[in-house]
Image (tube, rainbow, N blue to C red; front, side, top):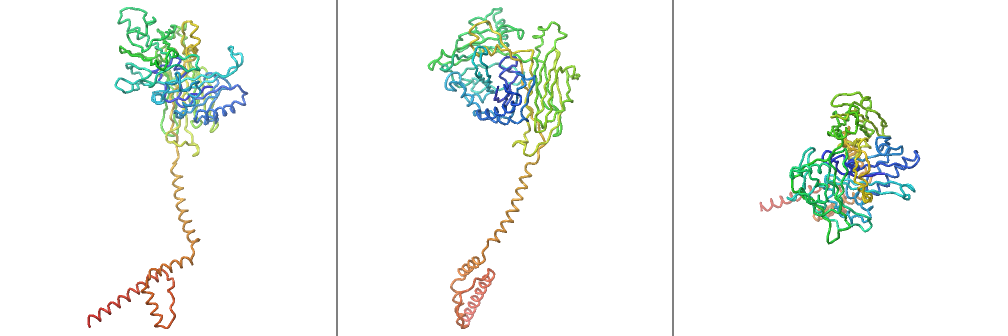
Length: 585
């Protein structure tokens, strides 16, 4: 089983694609999970479901979304390791944060408290260009390679960081194909921390500094120009004091790669044993360039990219472009007859079920010229998608001439319609098509070192010597689909609730109104408003009429208003009469 969490995309043009790190540790954005189950065929899907739920809880991620049959596939031969019980799934939009890194660190013997793990400063890691944490589990049977039955756990963290320049700013990202002078760096300037000894539970703890083949070739060229000789100073024990750069610490050992047909130069590894350093004397490995040096890493035979064609929300096409990196000169010597020299390329692509691919529309172009599919594709396996059941899958084996400059594959598709409940919260952003995998089975990204018994004890060097096929991941495609008006249900609900509120409010007001209490309330209110003068007038009127006085009844609001006007008129007339009498008297 292998699980990876990746933030960013590996830049194959600048960071290389032919070395063990790029082939094994470069992963697609988001989450990638594949597993091979040692169970009967009818139990594989159930085991996959249990695995996704377990990993989702352990790593605080949405891996449980891969339990549905519409999200994972079963490659047959294009994805290593190919097996009938293999399941493969990806989540391109899964966000990677410290919640996923913390469970990964808990699997280490000393976590991030001692040893090399103290360098894993969260802000420094997530500020970099690329970050990928990988977890690889392998179950071993009893007696395999002289070991008992158990599980082998391998953890790898691959980061591409940006050193801090002398002006205090961090180096910016270079564009593809742009050559810039490499900045000087140190562990403290990159991670903000230093290594202060190894973990007490670790048998060995080492730091390796690798000089790429392209860098070694460039240093040799500079050495020939400066010294006007072909001195083999690069492979001597004093190479760490070479005038082109300076290391802040003396390496404990220098490991030189054996030359092979991959390139004209060999890479060099400097080994620093962590157990020699303590709290008082920490390891702050750094490299300072004395002269400007520009080089490029070795790439895969073909640089792959993928993009969409077409417009509108009805149909489109997926295109995979392969461009030569001019490496055929290095590997054509392995073939006796140049005319029969062919380059094998395996393509593995998975598309969601709502992207309905027409596999019969596949077209192949070699050097911008259309070719017959049967002339280029040696083998193909297609698994059409089923609506809401399984995604579409395509596996192909291409046979391209070694001198090919460019190749392209195009395939058309229609965009499906989803139920309103199947849209994600950010449906207008688009839907992701996972990265396609391009592999070159005839090329292996491995490094061969001189025979030395101590090299077998290093897990990292043993990993570098394994023959792993060169493979790369393409971009994640973003497909816009037709989306409904999500505001319409909100508008209908709002209008309906308003109408019901007015109706039920009025109805409840009528049903729960008490007439007697309301009349008593109006009576008391009218009594308070009338005052003492109306009471005296009513009593005087009752005596003049010879009737018993009764307190005023609760008149309606209109009658109280009329009585108030009547009292006002009476007082006004009485005042005019008094004034008239006083004036004439």
